[in-house]
Image (tube, rainbow over all chains, first blue to last red; front, side):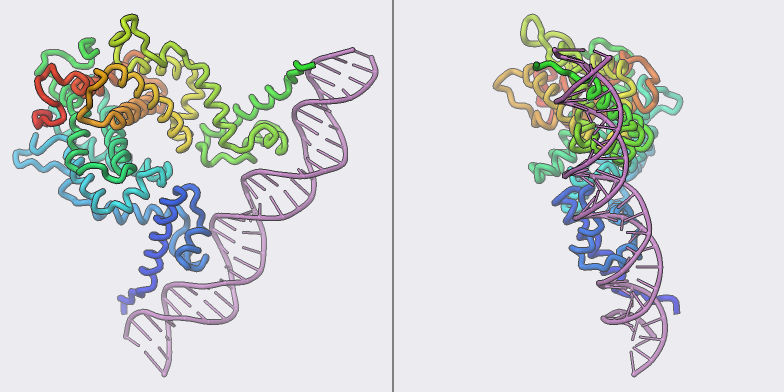
Length: 210
Length: 210
DNA sequence: CTCCAAAACGAACAGAGTGTTCAATTAAGT
DNA sequence: ACTTAATTGAACACTCTGTTCGTTTTGGAG
């Protein structure tokens, strides 16, 4: 009585998503028209609008699918002791591995193909991840010499820039190596921030950094 | 015989540029139509196309204007000795000051208003700046443990992310402070790269960074 | 001031894309 | 085999683009 899942609807949605991805890699998201999509997918115009209100909604549904397939254990940093366990910025390697597994999709999204929309969504998703992790690493009352907001968006931008390089160049090295580069570039600045006691001064004031 | 600069053309072009900037701050570049622009500027449709082939060309001409007004002395790092003079990444403070002087324009471009186009151009311009500077700082034969290309795009992304934060939040602090944050975050990683001898090992291999 | 060529105007057009509607067709699941 | 949901494709009104062309305005030279 309740369950009547018509196989056609899933098939149609998949056809449309794949068509969009193909076209994104050819022309970039912005240049793709609904006309293009339904032509390539061999789907009627009205069928498209029966499933999605928009080109954007189609893309969003694809992104959502991808997000759900991202391993959950990587979104938090559940150290047994509760405070500082596992490497800082633990999302990095899992996400690189995830990108490797879903290469086609990541390339379509992250490469020049994906417009401002993808960039914004990716930024938001990663930002909450990084924010939570950094916040948990800090002594509760402590205030940073740099607004946490800035550190977070800096970290996310840095990661996305390296990820984009990796994907644009057809994975010129292993995920582990990319992870290593990311950490080598970004961790010195971050750790100096959250553990300023070790060098005996507030880092952000140091002319010594020049 | 030769010189007949009609004041009208300059006036028209300025009207159009200003209209575009206004609309960008309201709706974002992508949502602005040529129709919008000529309506707001009170300029005839055919006049628009007599001056620019495109919405994009209009934007480009605005960007070009901005780029020309950027102080030249900041684009290179002309140390008297020729090698390491002045702070690393010297473009930072001058560009922040430039942004402060041209606030409206920078906000329209860098904030969510400016689409993928602005981001790409900005990325390219800054990338050549950073590339030249970093390349000049390195011992000539030396090879980095991280591709220079990666370091450059990482640096540019990091700077743009902080610049965007600054502009989006209506300049919550002085350019000098922003510059300080940028350097505090990014320089530890960069200097460790180009002067690896000081800590006695190749930085990129150090698990010690975790 | 007069004149005229350069500039701006605006209406009209063809082309392309969007999002909607609807009657007709197809095929999945019972 | 039958029913019902899904798909189809044509037609429609709409918006935007980029071009054309005859008309009007106006800056600047003489």
